[in-house]
Image (cartoon, rainbow, N blue to C red; front, side):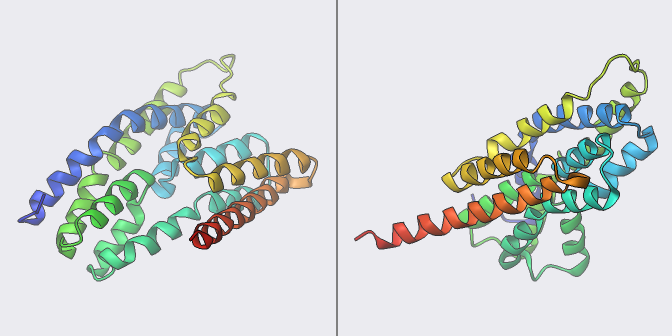
Length: 239
């Protein structure tokens, strides 16, 4: 479908991003609830979502906070989980790199998995789109995601403030995190990276200050990259 205006591109992005509402509402609701359970106030929980706006990194930080990990470990782990955003940005640069500075800054802030996935697929499928149309499409795709992440984080936090302490919800964080990352295992390299990270994390469980998590993450990334390289070389060697 060829777009004629930036408005039509925005509306198409809005339509393509709308299905993610079904995912965003329960996850943001749960985050708000477990964040309060972990000891954050309603304001701190909402501020966490507004400032960080990265579900996987937020759940990782919460898990480590509940384990009383050192602040530097929490920050390093959350940053490691969010490193994929740097790859997202590099991938989008050929398509929207010439957009206005304020637009790129705002897009960098609201870039999440959902907006990246639908946008990069559209840009690759329709290379004739102009930069203003791509920018409009991106903001359309993110419109159903980001405001709802804020809103239902607040709803979850308000609900969490009413939950009795006897209703322990600690189990919800690891289960939610697994549910978030499981759909990302789409290649052999992803699976190898996850398995190596799990094994190393178990072996390094005794490392002080929860640093075993960072060691496991690095080992998983190295294993995944090595597997990806091996697969590429094997594909290139085929006649």
